[in-house]
Image (cartoon, rainbow, N blue to C red):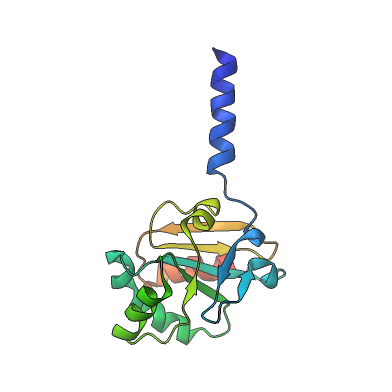
Length: 153
């Protein structure tokens, strides 16, 4: 019985622990495959969203503004939509000039994403340090202070 319980706990840890963030991959709007290995040595903000996600759509205007106000911070906003067309349609409809970057649910799950939207701070060594699940207030000073402190470790 104890052996089975230990095996269960070990399996649970293996399947719920996020992978090394450097292994995370996405495709840009030109079809080029990227990974967080390209950002080794600097912290990055990783944001997961989808056009079919109501909280994601509600959060997008403030997130888009924040991204444009902070060009010095590497931000990767990846869509979990099944097709780039759906993600692009939302960006055009809401007039958000963000690049459409795509990944799939398997990649997101490997990173520990359990709900949308999800924002993660990945440190300079490629490890997730902070995760925020759900829509965030991108104008809330307390939240922004947490982001700044996580990005400047």
